Each structure stands twice: as structure tokens, then as C-alpha cells.
Image (cartoon, rainbow, N blue to C red; front, top):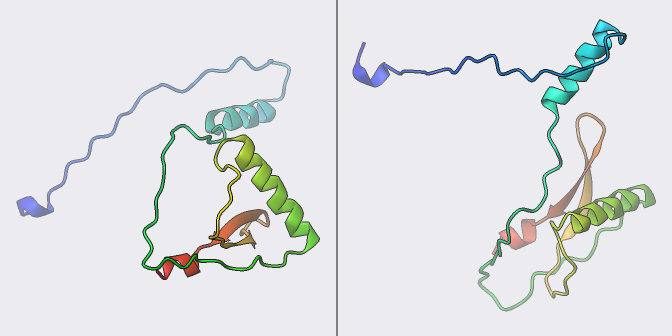
Length: 124
């Protein structure tokens, strides 16, 4: 076996499984379900830095795309997502000559994801 094909792997095996005090009168299955949820829980990500982004374009002409017409059900989804992003400090109100379309994409599990179509901006 050559040195190039040899690889070493190190695995840390610990017993650092969190312990939870769940009432004993709850069924074992329910306790297991609760423990699984608590172990896998990840809080919502929020803005933790003040990073500024600049995009260099090749032309002075603003890249503008007219808003896409959304059904009322999708408008509600977009409005709720924008409110959440604003409250979490992910986005902030602004005024600009640049604009990209907002659209709602269905995920495999049937839930919705709000996306911004930056294809026109990416072309420059």
C-alpha cells in the first residue's frame, strides 16, 4: 500500500449524551420522543455579525426585474417570511433602483421556501 493511499481517521467516542429529567409516569415511547426532540433541537439562526456586502457590476444601469405576480396564498407566505427576516435582523428596509423577483418554491415535504431570483444579476 502506498503512502498516498493510506489515511488515518480519529473518532471521538464519548458518553456525553445529555440527561433529561422527564416525569416517570409518561410512557417510555413518549419519553424517548421528547428526548429525541431535545437532543436534535437547534434554535433559529439569527444575525450575529454586521457584514456588509458589495456587488461589482459592469454597467451603471440598475438591474431591475418587475415583481412577479403571486397568488394570495403565496403573498401571505412571503409577507410572513419578510416579517420574520426583518424581526431577526436578517434584512432591513431599503430603497434601491435594483430589484429581483421573489418567488415561493415548494419543498419535497410540502412546505414552502421563499426565494429571490438573482439570475439577471448573476449575468453581469
